[in-house]
Length: 457
Image (cartoon, rainbow, N blue to C red; front, top):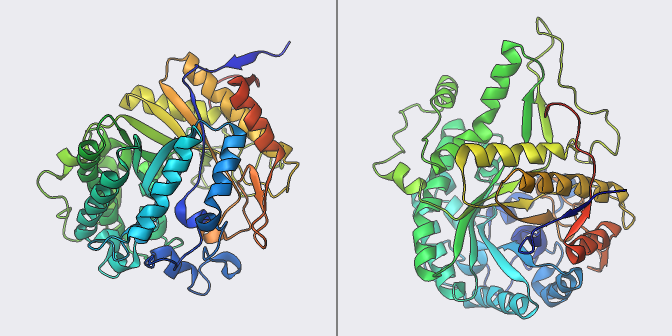
């Protein structure tokens, strides 16, 4: 008989989206240009020349989307605000039409019994700030604090769950080092400054949000994969350690450990600090480690770190065979037990008071009968239940994503939604995975999938 996994009565079942990925209305009602508007309109930057000009047209169809959420039985909805829709120049004059859009959305969510979780920054920096140097410029952190103050004053009477940043490591390493995300910069010294200023802006924003939104919970969302060395060789283990610039470079300062000395040495050797770490000013590290109420984790895959074959030991931690069941169409490995691993790692090392899985999902292009996505979600929710049994304070789960959307540099070819979107007509149709998720919410649980045998590899 299949075991049924019950979740706590207070467990938060949600879905997540991001402003640029779904809203459209890119230049309407006083909205300013964002770095993703500029980047997607630059030839060669996004697959097929796709842009977020219309996307899912959520800016005009938001009432329909709230009804969709209500039909799913969602307890919460995590969405981000377009900074440039509210402050077209990034600071200064407020665009009231943009603020009203989000105020009306919040009211509709609350009326539907859905708790709003607001993310202040999900990568779409106002282009006006980028023209001044973007996140590599310390003044952008000051502008973010101003933005957080404006928004939390306007919405903090109703919104009680706030996330400052989504995945600052992606902005840092893909936006300012590799250049494959907006703003398309390729400069390591700029990237390390960006990381610091993102973290600093978080530290400055949290007290403002607390002041403007009493009794609110405030946190930050970080991305984390389950990474393992391909063997016990020195080369593989060192590559694995170096790869933690994606995680420890952000987690450690937030929890009072400072920037890891070994990763500082790695970055120094690559020329990251031509004038030293002089961008770190007195009081910065104290501001960054401001206590938060939760951390959000975005988890999608396992990664096996392999330095190379020549002179190396045989690989011992093999990825699963590459089948549609084991790898999503993004070529990300479907490894649900890794979610248990990262939840355990973050909790037992950093001891956050609460954890939310703020993103988890899979890219499959099947229009409606998406059994592979359902299987992916089932294995990962089973891992969440095992984490709860281990005493990890997991408070909720947000599937990525409520609907198919603009997938950044991939354009519209990667579909993560539990709802199918016809991008020509805007029509929404719930997929089988969405129906399955609605039943999980209704029952507050699901049938178990067996945990892998042996060590977490």
